[in-house]
Length: 482
Image 1: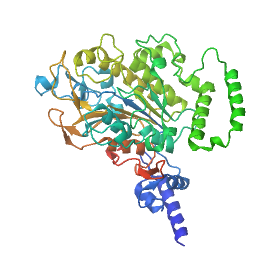
Image 2 (image 1 turned 180 degrees about the vertical axis):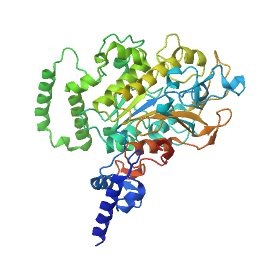
Image 3 (image 1 turned 180 degrees about the horizontal axis):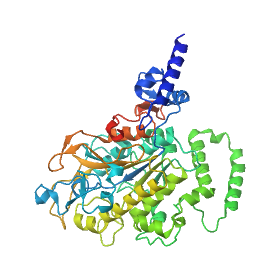
Image 4 (image 1 turned 30 degrees about the vertical axis):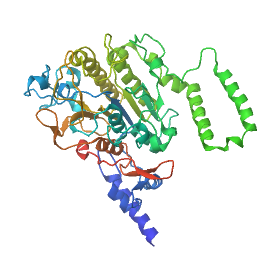
């Protein structure tokens, strides 16, 4: 009788949910409790999937692009300006009015100023980490890795948000579920802690686009094939020859079936087969091939590295990739910081913001939102635009001024996928140094993303040791969907 009662309640609840006009179509925790599908410790994957058999309502978003501002963008010089602060804090830029009355952003972002109705600004994000590696791990996964002093072997290597999506909501098109482009993340190499599968395992790492093939130094983008390394065959190897090699290898493998019973080897073979499938699939080749885009589209996004990365992200989403982490870096000449320019502007801050970072960011991000909207993809594609932290309110005395690492308060943008544009959530103090209103942590951003994608933020997944973990310890920012 108890079982019959639970089923009856679940059916009644699922019918009720279908009638709801929800902005993001989530099955709430309370509703899952009523359907008898939530365990005491949290919602498990198997029970969540069984719950979906009762109600096929999913989140509004089907895809997510995380535009990662590698190094940390300065909140005071972009989306949280303080024009009445002292000169050593406010900087030289002026705020400008935007499409939405009452919202002002930096004068160096005129294209984005015309589109504030399409995105939400969160001005109250903060955490406690001041170093790139742990800060990036927190931003990418939504789980704090500990302290700045922790090093990778001591960290709990949580799966990135893209890895969780790959596990729960994989692509159904034959494309990778999760792509990282380009793969180089600051000074931490790949895999970065919490940039990949973490405790879910390497099977949930992103498909990495290698920058040395995809993103050449000072790219001209004149019809050159930007096929990622590992997705193209050497010129002397035809597909038929590769398949013949695989057949020969298979014949040898058959003789060593017992020796290959080891699970790690079996998994390695699975990864190799998936990579081979990608190499040989024309659809995958085409999705990564930016030369198939028109000159007009290249110009719309900008022929900068940042522009081309975001153009590729749109192509991947259009081809069915669920989650893209797009490393939004620049490629200026005459900088001592790096072979490519991240947002870590301890010096040359205003020169780089003037000449490269802000113009490229303004053009590329506005183009991405316009392009997705025109193709009917923005409603089903969630955009998160965030770095691992912000920059110091105080301008330092380095050449051309600089701003250092600052996690005390920084700004994040969200758009598409059910997010209501034209709003500002949270506030910082008079110097954008600390949060004054509605504090948000990366945990909450992750919970919001999962909710928008129809994945309960309190879902439990098991690691390779069969231990359960919550995919998020935060809470969704409900007002973003209102």
